[in-house]
Image 1 (cartoon, rainbow, N blue to C red):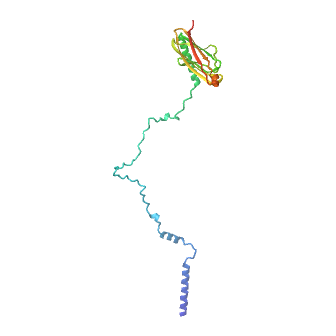
Image 2: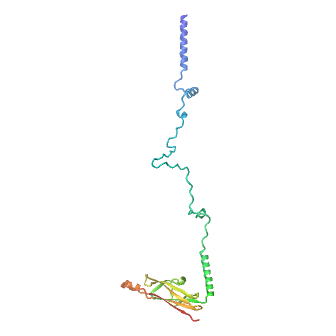
Image 3: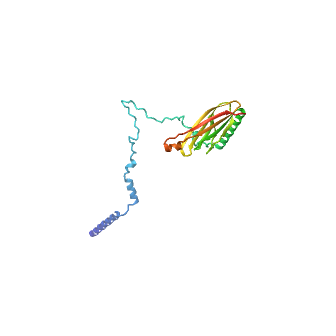
Length: 255
């Protein structure tokens, strides 16, 4: 009887040890989902989730100006910038270069044609109004010089401009037209260079007063004489002379 009890107690002890061994988790095995969820709910929350946002630093907030005992109270901060008025010298939008279409270019040929026609009408009107006339004749003498430019003026207006290589060894009429009776200023502008050297140049402008009687025709002869020897004498003797003379002879022509 006693031996049976001992064997029964031994069986119970072995069964208890087996149950305990089965209840412990094996090494390397993953915990069950229920245990993981339980441990996650039991873990404390991170500090960043429950902590309040940091307070703004002192540099982020504007500081109020502190009064100075020497300069007095500081002016209050400006809340808004004052509006600037436009200058009266600023161009208006329509005055800018890209405002609107550009004006068409000037037709200079048409303009010169209109000026020529206007001059013709003025000349015809002058001929009708005035019976007095002025005739201008030019003669240029000088074997060793060439005429580079020659212009004849009447009352500060150009009435004749010589073409290139102008030659007038004999008398040549360059202007004849009706003019108002009375005093007029007749002038000649001439520029010549020596045929023996282009660097030897002489220029001269001369003006004369001419009186045209009422209803008469006046002939004015402009004679240019060039006896300069600068190109010949100066290179050899270091001594030369420009001798350019302009003379005017005016007379009333017989009817």
